[in-house]
Length: 458
Image 1 (cartoon, helix red, strand yellow):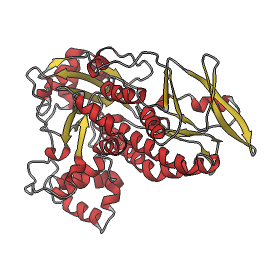
Image 2: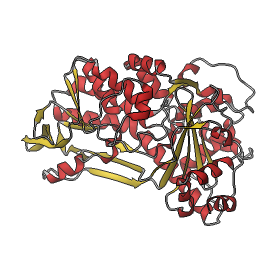
Image 3: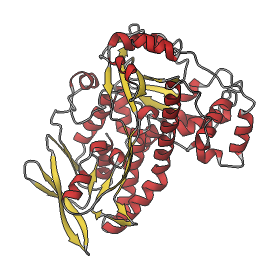
Image 4: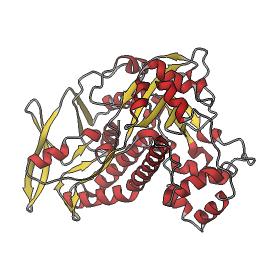
């Protein structure tokens, strides 16, 4: 999706763009056909839970409005995150700019189908499906490696002013550069430590489940993710520590169902017709890469886009939104520096580090904090009090339950508008939130105890 988004933005900016896609299945002619029959073996999470944050919707509205219109015609649901305002907040009056919290939500195949159909109609854009890339073509420029194009598995070569790696978290580009003797791509991070179990449902009566708990809810050693989708469908996901062997029994439908039923604020999400089995996904990465080594590009003529640059546990639903922001940034950087490969590499890294890296780092910190909490509970210990950004986030969640403006600040973070840390750093707001949180009792949401959970999965 992010590769197609970047390709569309670049093509509409006047560039001739070619997209090479290993999967050969043709684009379906309808959203429903995409969900039922489209085979995308190269995308592990193709049928997993998916959510586009309001920040992503804003990019589509500004840059690819025809895609947004196609999504709405295809059944995408409009959601206003402010409608999930906690009932304890008395001030329900609107604020200027509240429209920024509106998004549209759909299953991933529906969104990719809309992008692919738009790409097929773009005169400057050629999408070749069933065309796997074997390696890069390179030359030396001013003593440094420069990527001049690609070689397909068929043996064809294609030259380009710029090669965009949109091959996702499993991108072989680091291996290609290593095998070509260019050097090692800088990489940090690893497995996030989570496993997902997801099932999709369709409404039996045209209604969709009422949201009475956060879309992402932590309940002891499990987390639940409930996401409205398109055409009266929705997903329910349980995710757990990948080291928690007993809970891997949730791959079984009856066990998974029993666990969700035991969560009082979530059980009603099962009241629909199942349209998938329980779909498991592991190997979820929190990792980022850089083509700069000691401030110099390892290779010019190539950039890393979206998950090929950084990937995170998708529970916060930031992946596509960050990819859309990255795609727009690539369009802008290419406007200025396409004819200057070394400057483009530097400008691209600077943009990525300034505008996207804070979201990666915040997601990484939240993942690690949650995993520490889970592991303590599994061991029968009380989790350590959070510190640093985790303490501020927890304090914000406690205080915002009665504060309309702080709730909006939290939504700005979740929507990928403004990082929470940036908001809390203004005018002593963070210190004030910590002080107020000390006087607020933390809200405990109902769910099975660890003992109950182990009994359910036994």
